Amino acid sequence: HFAFRAAALATVARAFRARSVRRKYAAAREAERASHGGEQPAALVRTQRRPAWLLLTLGVGSWTLGQLCVCIYEIGLGTRVPEPSVADGFYLLSYVLVISGLLAFVRTPAGLLSQLRGAVEALCIACGFVLCSWSLLIGSVVARSGSLDPGGLVNLAYPVLDAVALSAVFFVALRRRLNPPAGLNLLALGIILWTLADSSWWYMIEVDPSLPSVTPLET
Image (cartoon, rainbow, N blue to C red):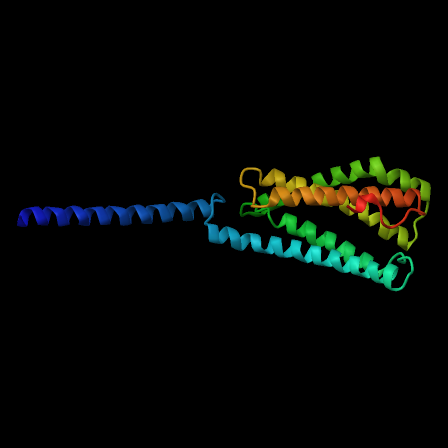
């Protein structure tokens, strides 16, 4: 019986030792994958995504403040919103925050060359989307308007930033197609619908300024 117990204890000790070695080996492999840009621990991933969602939240908040300014002008004061106005500042700031939030989802490998390659790729995509928007919408309106006053320049920034936002969605989807963050698909769909509706409304209001400020595109 003593020999049997000793053998059993020795077997249990070897099992615990092997389990400890496997845990250390798995932790080392996980750390190595993280250092080379591979899979990362869930806590680290959540920490890295937090700035992206914070910027997106601030962007939505800035857009809400712009809408509040419009309501004050049109409902409270009973006048048309001037161009440019404080609302435009909040609206344009929301674009910057939302685009920055989208780009914050992308993690490039360590190294200056990889970061420059990612920046050049994003810039090329943005230029392509802006050129398409210019050919389809913006160019004809600018050619018909002639010289642009400050209000016209501010209004022109909306379709340009719409194209940049669409390019940011495409860039993030391209870079994160293998491991997309939770909720990215729904977020991308919302931004695509928002930018398309905004650019369409800009084109309609530039072609016919007498249109009401509330249109079916608002939905």
